[in-house]
Length: 260
Length: 119
Length: 145
Image (cartoon, rainbow over all chains, first blue to last red; front, top):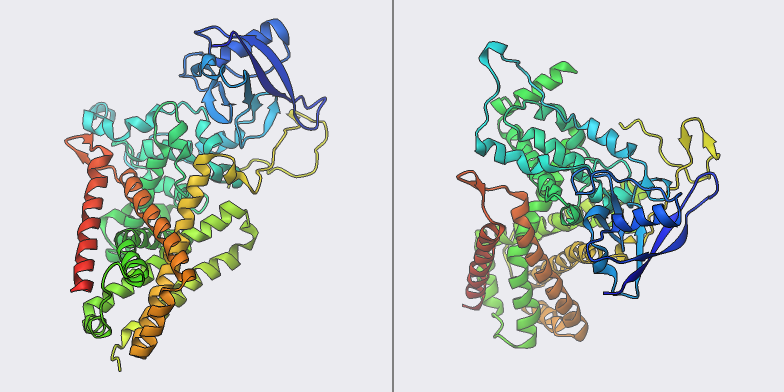
């Protein structure tokens, strides 16, 4: 393991630059250091103007997502020593497919708008009275959606998904996984309300199951699986609506139509 | 709603075609396009194939194999052109060529297999 | 649907109130060459072209069968030509690639739960392979009989 590594970081400041230019920083390599430690070292000792997001430094807040050597990673969860072998140069770039505000900081409003569009809260059609007490849920019911609730909104999946890059309006992996987290929750009755955003060409149908989102997810949420399951469900719902146009399953849709 | 259910239909066709293509195409391709021409296996005679094709369920099987596989190709190729070549502005043209091609192939298959009374 | 400003290609002014100028890199047309996983994905999608190619060959074969023994013999002869063998050899590779990737990915679309726990993916993929083997054997027997 070498004791120094050079980080190549694109610097972009809207006051000065039209587009980013790369700068190199030499950083010592300690066995336990992660990429975030290297960035903090640069900001402390070399160039205080380096700008990047970080918070918890333990892989739970989702702030420090970056492209490390072309791979979307959490900088607090990526060891520096794994990169100190190849010619001692490491490229650290802002996450792909989002606009860059400055240096390594990306503009997240594109994500936040999409998260809000899928209505990520419990939607009830009938509210039971308070006297009935809280909603009860068995461990099996929790198991249905728990995986999707683990998302930390780090947007690594958006940086990995080529469809997000090619189509900025595509709803995207994290938003659809979040929608599934609520659709699969036994306390929720809002699957019909979310359908307009999801069962849409820029919703689930835009996904071509590249599968990169699941591979890079640090919390093993498996958004690709969530999307494919929703596709199957949407297809089966269409078949059912064909076969039983007045069936029970269509009451959500009819209530939605009546509210339009 | 109509736009959304059309995507559901097309995806269902793609999915069904994918299963059919995955199960059936390899063995058909290996037998008829590789093993028989190369002489690795004795090819079936003209009469044997005609005998098989006289059975209605064989013709239905072949029709489904051809038609669903074509719809599988149409859907996948349409999205590959959108993503791979970023030609989204040719939306309508790609849609027509892909699904139109699949429909044309289906019609041709129906014509070939529909009325089977060989010479 | 989303009330966010869409990006424009020309350079915006240096500073708009509460809005610094973002840098928005274009995604290259060759994005799919940038990563091995992307290339594998595009190859998987391209396999559908070879599926369609073989369907066309099958339809031409059926047409030759309808036309009579001489036409069918001519068609069989064409199948032995180097170009046909080359196309079909490559097709075989891609068609097998389609089958294997399809069966390996199918479990992700189905969350099959048994006693509350999700079944491991191999338990859903394996029956597909078994059915594939049985169907292939059945077709082979029917054709070679």
